Image 1 (cartoon, rainbow over the protein chains, first blue to last red):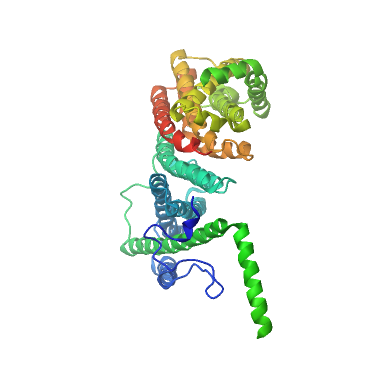
Image 2: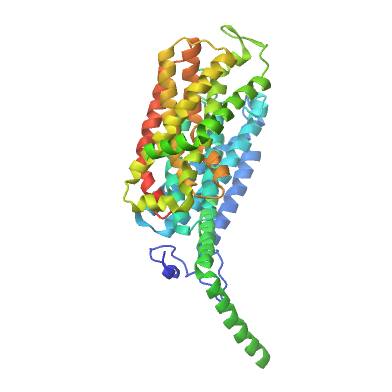
Amino acid sequence: MSTTAAEPTGAEPGDKPLVASAVNPPHTGSVATRRLGVAAIVLLALTLLFGLVLSPPEVSQRDAVRLMYLHLPSIAVTYLAFLTTAVGSALYLRKGSVYWDLVAGAAAEIGVLFCSFVLVTGSLWGKPTWGVYWQWDARLTSTTVLFVMYLGYLAVRRLELPPEVRSRRAAVLGIVSFGNVIIVHYSVKWWRGLHQGQTFGADTKMDGLMLFTVFLGLMSFLVLAAWLLIHRFRVSWLAREVEQVGLAQALAERRAETDATGLVGRSR
Amino acid sequence: MTVKDLRIELTSRVVMAQILPFGLLILILFGLAISPDLVVVGDARRPVIEEIAPGLFWLTVLLSALMALGRAFALEADDGNLDALRMAGLDPAGVFLGKALAVTVQLVAVETVLGFGAFVVFGAPVARPGLLAATVLLATVGITLAGTLYAALAAGLRVRDTLVPLLVLPVLAPVLLGATQASRDALFADPGVPGWSWAGLLAVFSLLYLGVGMLAFGPLLEES
């Protein structure tokens, strides 16, 4: 770890250097992300409109089917986020670039968030459909294990360790966890597969409008996740900068700052 | 490494004197929590406790394993021993295997006694001893390989005692599942449970973690 971290060594982020100054205090917004944020809001509003108003209720599940428009996109985002964590972790171990470590961490947080959406919407859907909030369904069980596993990953990221050591441990965990997802998924599926068939078949036929709404939900969640990821990454980057600057330097700067402003303030 | 850890155990007897009684205690507590009288009507009529004995046994093993793993790294936590190991030029993969093997030996010892205890307390018959032995061995290797890897993540930290269970238990969920199912088959010769296939799953899990652990232990030991 060098103290030259203020100079971005990689190609990213293609943004202004996020260095604190009195004139331009660091923030995490930029023109591109603002546009992305607006796009996310518009898409989410459209998803609401299509999901709640325009799309028809399903024959057997009735209105409960509308939860699907949140549920399926959340699952997609969860898996993508955890995949990003694994890839980011691998690249961090390979290249030692802090960017990838921060990307991995940011993606994991987003994954955990959306995974909780998956579980909540899933059990809300389970109540009217299965009659219970919780069933020892293969996917439900493996998703819950997945959720707890990444809570553990986030706990490791928060350990009080030297940053490099912590990043390296988190990276190992980030990669291994993704492999675990696969093992857990198949073992649980096999376990429940012996007792009962799947609740959903691939042959479940979907109305055109419903399919479109699912697609719309997927788009809006992806954009939302991208927006969150970028901002979370920038926040971690700033947090790391602060850590890097160190107390001594911060104090020195503050002293110089107050001296300067004090003098200027009086002369004004 | 293995010999060293086992020698420490022989002199200190923490595993035998504390972890083993802990496991036995858990078994007894399970017995108290679950009524021994009730009868389940499934394919066969068995007392509840006998029906769920495999699951209870493996849960107890998992909890004991957590303690044994914590102990394995507590041994190295003091005085920067892990740094010393690294400086001694030991291969990280070797350290990993040594640690895992030492825990495996200790855990098998614990399981033998616990198994006997479970046999006495829960009174389950053993229909297929060969499958049971294979399950115990494979599951134990899986638990210790994965456990050693994750325990190393938290080595030398104050939060270790709380962090390791959070990390290890979800990962070991497939092992618990596989071991319980395979043991069910071994005990009751359950026609609906493919015991050897579940044992195969345990073997695959162990092999995976053998590979991952040997690869990953290097980065974990560095500068930790």
